[in-house]
Picture 1 (cartoon, rainbow, N blue to C red):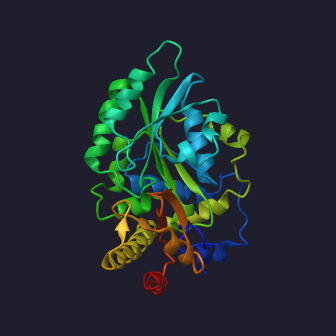
Picture 2: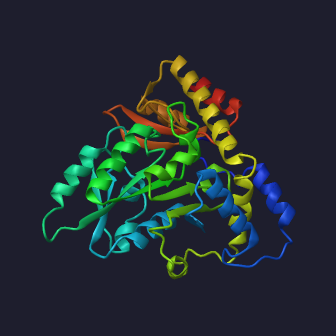
Length: 337
């Protein structure tokens, strides 16, 4: 069975495995206070081009989203997100379980717009409505699309107008930055956002995400919340070692480029077969529309995700590439079409 289900169905990138293998007998301080975590934090700050940042390593994406939002919001405040957003539909109400409402709104190609934010602010202006205090966006989006610099600048402008914080979920940030649609550099990211989540799980690590706060909104007691919410890994050095290697020698971006190259190859071959795309393929998530009978036949040899029903006889499915995707696997899928 060949899998295009997601970009985290392999253990880890060989360079990451080699680093852990080299250090596996080393004794380290626990709970993220080790030398590898400290160096990884410094490397990430260098990569972002800012020193005045607070960086924490968290095992998984849902916990990272939950902690980022819970830390910043007051009890009566909520977060605006697209109705296609990860926190809106893929996390079993994890944000609401902390006591904070996800205020869902429409999107344009998976992206949150200034117009949608303004509409939410008007709708939530009643005295007894939840007060929006943050927006949640992801790059890439749930449709594999990518935010342009101008779009982030427009979001920054409207958020400053209303006093909203911007939280960017970068579970697939490496793929966004390597997309042919991207015009944003890593060192420009913190110009537009207040909180950033750099994905490791979907970028070649065994596990781990890096949560980055601007220092002026970082909570000095964040580690207490991290522990209380069950997201503090005793062997935190395992994440530190991996992120240390990921941000050495530009490996993070190399993995992203390799993955995007595979996705673009895949999209080109699908297009040559006359396949219709549900969303323009610009990252490592490719959405195509097929007859339901063809989808059922493909499921005998391939793994992928169902996206949505298009009409009575066809549906959209999602195909995802990773650092481990091989050309032979892509050809096998295309040949089956």
